[in-house]
Length: 318
Image 1 (tube, rainbow, N blue to C red):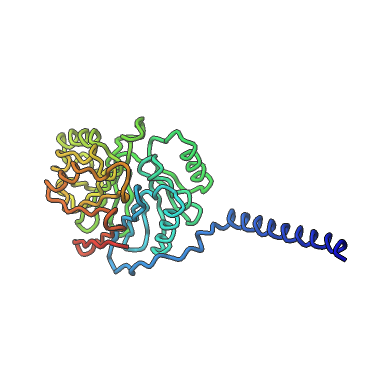
Image 2 (image 1 turned 90 degrees about the horizontal axis):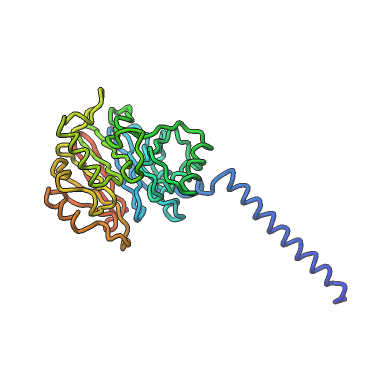
């Protein structure tokens, strides 16, 4: 009897293995067609009020991810973190909580801590348009990201000065730098974006360096209106909120540049205990010298700016 039962046990074991392989294969096919992150629970986010524009500086550690949520529900994503498993989950869950009416994606810089999470956004959401930096990174990871953009088929635009996005609420984003599409240096080509809504002015500085700031100061000295286009005004003298460049690096946010901007509030995206020592003490001192209140994401987590009725409030800790 024992000898006869052995083949039966082997058959049963083979059947269980085959069934397990079929389940794995089915899950793989399903994941390819339907990304599992569509099943992630939506983040709990307070309902947006009538006429309110919100800027969500999402805590993704040592990286950049900003959601501009316009009053009618359209969302403009500026960078999307490094593409790590944890950060992708956080980005997708938060976007699901915002439940965007339409979605535009923008990559300000070809470093992975800016574009890493964009491919997953393209997989999970219907993206209408993507703005890309003028200089690509010569890495396999960035090439895979560009391939994901091509596969998605959304409209593409390359960042250059005066490239803009205008919302139906009359809020607008306009690119101040780089100057043109013909940039050659990856770091110097980081897109600096100016946001205006209801008299409140915000500058998102990406990874702009002191050298780029100095070049822009020279242009500003020629004409304070040099960054405005025919329809959209840019006023850099005394912005309300500054998204500090390059995670608070000592090689950005120079004294003369900050003296022009004189931001009331400064948001710094940096990870806890990061190996770069961001934000640098020199940068914090320069921000303090112009009277800016600093909001560090390594200390406060996600930071949300609410703009409404010509004023703004800041909350944090989610």
